Length: 402
Image 1: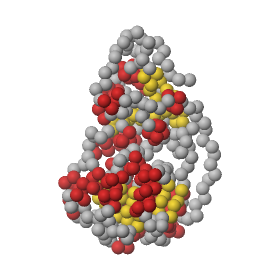
Image 2: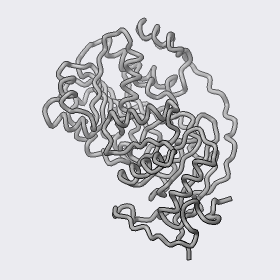
Image 3: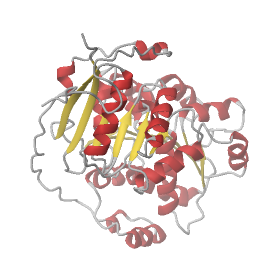
């Protein structure tokens, strides 16, 4: 049953009219999605047949140090995307990996990259592009973890961080560069980053990069590389934009598909009707006080609105952290760390800031501002109900009182 405005809120008389005038013109654009699409009775995920891997990590012929590190980290049996992609990549083939977030795809390309780097030791021989700072940072952390003791060096180049420090790191000659398209292109234009020695080009979450408007940047970056190279492209979906990149950038690629059912039928979805912005905040606070949750991500439309909402909740003893485009890299890292660790249970975010995040145990997603596109809605609520669990998604709908 939908949440309705039952009685007076805790702070405002039910009959009081407090028109809310939004200052940001983007926020005035109403969602075009029929509210009925925000409602769904959760269905328990169907039992899926257990995947039987064809390989163990020890079967791939990785160097002794990598094999020992994997064993130390407890990696014995590959996930489906790892099982099917690693051998192809080790053979030097171009690979298209279609897989959801959280399926272990990072190791599917990082392990072959480490093996090739160990063989040639050429600086800036691998470029890995990711849609967001957070995802690029996760890839860099995984690469360093798997490369322990091998003297393979990587550099992270993303927006929101000190570019002069990144320039100095590139000048030291890393083997692997991991970054977001905008910052990588900037460093190329400054003639700091040269890609003439790249032998491996990796696109992670290619569909997200295309959705975020990076197609032009990606093409500009690719033009700086040798045509004779290996390209690995990972994506959750094969959109027309990704298909075009595949056709232009890749040579006779092998396609591996392990995408699971992408529906969100296992997520309980409902709407909350509110008169105006002030009423939405009251209802949100009551929900956070009365509804049991482990972790909740609240989505807002604008950077300013997200920060203001997080500050408002915190001032009312509902401690929240915010991530959005105006936050520095260190601020975003700190916010995500406190949320992942459970020190703070409420994260308020814009769509762009939350792209690529894989945060476990998110029990609720709340759309404080309804998304404009249904694809954005699917992406948002997909942050909950992971790893076979059910989740809950609530979307505010403004319905002025008559």
